[in-house]
Image (cartoon, rainbow, N blue to C red; front, side, top):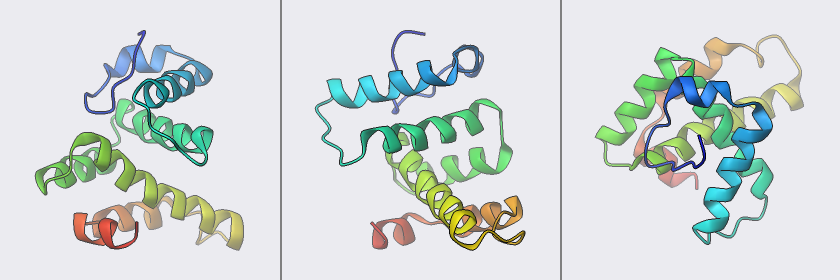
Length: 124
């Protein structure tokens, strides 16, 4: 796999054959070549990569959320950002609270189920 385009799902097997640094580099290269200026390009790439990893591993809840958001009108790239925003919030909760409840994947999945295009847009 030589390029990454967030508008098109990467082949899951090819994506998972790459090591994490290669995945991150592909995501960063895409944003650089698209002329996207980011405050924190590495953090942005990490969020893309984690969500793409979840999709490549066929996490049904993440897949359903992405499909639902796209059906609601987001393109795939924005849908990845929306899911990534929930992931970032979840990780922030784990880091700041450090409790068993904050680390619950059920909490993350519930937040994904509650995510809508409108709620994502209002929190941007």
